[in-house]
Amino acid sequence: MKRSERPPTVTPFFDKGSSTFSYVVKDPDSTHCAIIDSVMEFDQASGHTAYAGADSIIEYVRNNELTLDWLIETHVHADHMSAAPYIQQQLGGKIGIGAKITVVQQTFGLIYNEGPDFARDGRQFDQLFKDGDHYQVGDMVCQAIHTPGHTPACMTHILGDAVFVGDTLFMPDSGTARADFPGGDAATLYNSIQKILALPEDYRLFMCHDYRPDGRALEYETTVKAQRADNIHVHQGISQEAFVEMRTRRDETLDVPQLILPSLQVNMRAGHLPEPESNGRVYLKLPVNLFEH
Image (cartoon, rainbow, N blue to C red):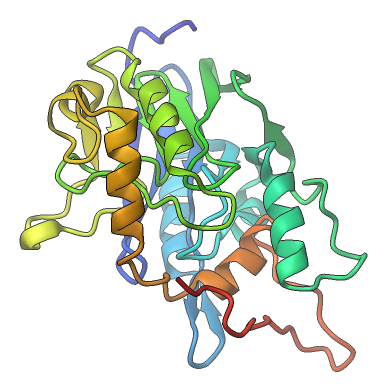
């Protein structure tokens, strides 16, 4: 894969409610950019949606006179809803996600008892990335790598020297993603992480979340080298067997994300809400006793 002579400019935007980072990634040789993992705010108690974070991103893109090429979803998020359609309506660009979104749609289409009108072939997205696919942001050649384990559709995106890992990895002191959601698998996650750790050691890794262990300052960027040396769950020398044992034991103690049930319904639709019902209102379903250890 050809690497740009100059690194892309990466600008983070933080959603405090879900501890999520979104990014604007600018091609160093043009005014073209991509947006990674945007957030639509959702108040579960009232059912109210809002776009304050997305509006900040839109303002940044417009103020810097950038052209949006891509809206990338690293995976079907379980802790926040995507603002990709809202941003696309105002700035253009294509919405892309991993091709295994179809597996997620099949799984949760059954869980939510979606009818035949819900397409399960990924057509809600403009692009379904397969492992190794290349695409461009301006003149910058980018690559999508399939890194399942947290979910079947997880992709890591490499834009120049900037790598967006979704939930597969966290900062070294926070470890790795959970693997106990439907379609998740700890052994698969371990293998996916090895793909990321095999990248050049100076590549910059950008996190989707940071939960500030021990109250430290917020962080979102690290390197392949730092993860190899210091990741508390999967640094060099940790075997797959040891990782799977740790990850399985740890996942049994974790709470279900607060917004998982509404988020999955929206994100498997590329950030679109379900179609209004006969009274003109939009509804999100709440399956009872779905996640039980």
